Image (cartoon, rainbow, N blue to C red; front, top):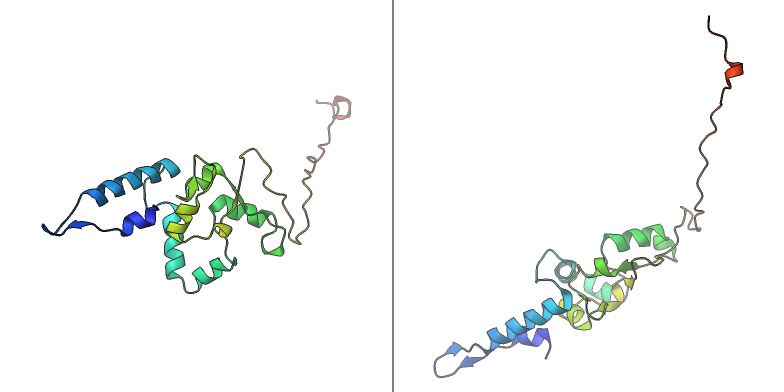
Length: 171
């Protein structure tokens, strides 16, 4: 039974006309499972709820996301994408687990995006960044033309050293 099914399910006693405790208990259990999966409480602060709102309220966004035309991520994934080429191609759509875990879409036990949570929020898995180890390579930066930028550092300018002999004598 998925989280979505439990949110939608309603049960009540026909004779008394009141809802039974089963849905509340089921919802509480589901919220506990949610917390175990993500390590987070449900909150509008995290990306999952914001992505759901954007997909539901931005004309054409859901269709574009389903076609693979949109990419989602936290600021680190956007910076990596921009620094590795952005729309010029060859760019890296990546993040690390610590940032992925703050989205409400990442299963912290399995170390992967949760299909169940992505379905709940209506976020296509293909739109999410690849999760890489924090000490791993995230990509290579490019210059403005889209070519791989050389990571060189200019040496500091040489200062003219004046030896004591060349200094004028003090009087």
